[in-house]
Amino acid sequence: MRKLSITLGAAALALGLASPASAVPRPADFGQATLTGFAVLPAETFVPGSEPSGSAIGAGPFNGIAAPFSGQPVQGFSGVVRRGDGTYDVLSDNGYGNKANSADFLLRVHRISPDLRNGKVKVLGGFNLSDPDRRVPFALIRADRVLTGADFDVESIVRSADGTYWIGDEFGPFLLHFSSSGRLLRAPIPLPGVRAPENPDLNGGQPNIRSSKGFEGMARSVDGRHLYPLLEGTVDGDTPGDLRMYDFDLRTGRYGSTWRTYRLESPSNAIGDAISVDDHRFLVIERDNEQGDAAAFKRVYLADAADRDHDGRMDKTLVADLLNLANPRGLGGFGRTFRFPFQTIEDVALLDDHTLALLNDNNFPFSSGRTAGKADNDEFITVRLARPLHADRRALQ
Image (cartoon, rainbow, N blue to C red; front, top):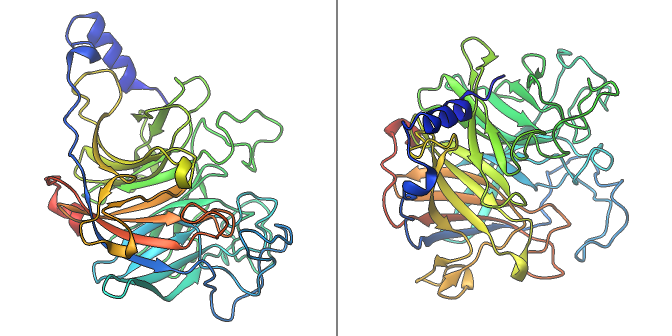
């Protein structure tokens, strides 16, 4: 693939057809956003009647919790789909952080219902991800072909109009297409020219993206015809801090020949999620890797592919600082300023033109961003922006 967007931007500058980035002011930030809803799913929530899990993470205790666990934890939300009826589909992360310790973690989509009146999140059910039709060409951990965190590291999810799900993985990175009940419909779709260290087809070759830096976010176009998967890390040879957002055409089943570029505020940051606002703007979670009092950067940006300064990168506008949310009603028992201080914040949904829903990935049982020494809960919050996004109405459906 050719990085055409940056090539054209550089050429325009050379010909005097575009102004340098310094000559084009950055769009004004939205101002302080406000916490409007808060609900919690306790850290120690498990799928009823499920298999034991966590046998390879050590005995612990981890933040006061011993392992292994008698069931599958409902944890690690790495993607969210708004269903439009007050419920959400949330995607489990790959398990406990890597291939080596996650073979007994079953990949799953949960259905949850946050109740902002009583501050609780109810788990309504869900389904495991599986490959009974043997679409995956490489060996899986389980003979029954139920997928585990040692098979894929699933980090992003969208739902198509036909009810099927597209999921982004970091081990390939791959795109995975599942039925509405979690059955894999076709072979994993690799990303041409990019391979992670865990890629099963590496065959002794050199990866060109770091471990756990594959498809972290994925937006669906407002017309439903394209997917826009966004890498979490920089591909070797690109400028550090530049992340590629690809264009996958659902009609042809192919990637486009170019990509957009999202620029991190610091090369040490990472993205958590991405969703469409209209045909050229996206909401992107960007974060540092800290938690608790050390957390200093947890933000939501509006990224515009129109690229007014012609530097080849999407323009960015800060819409919400998640460490500085107004909390006039004292929701959650917190003070007038609310902080969302989690290491990994990986879920954003657009509720209306002013309001976002966000969830954390609690990395159960390892993260303790809310209270030192205590495993993080999964928190669901709603945030009202200081001004409207002027989103395409299809992004709100």
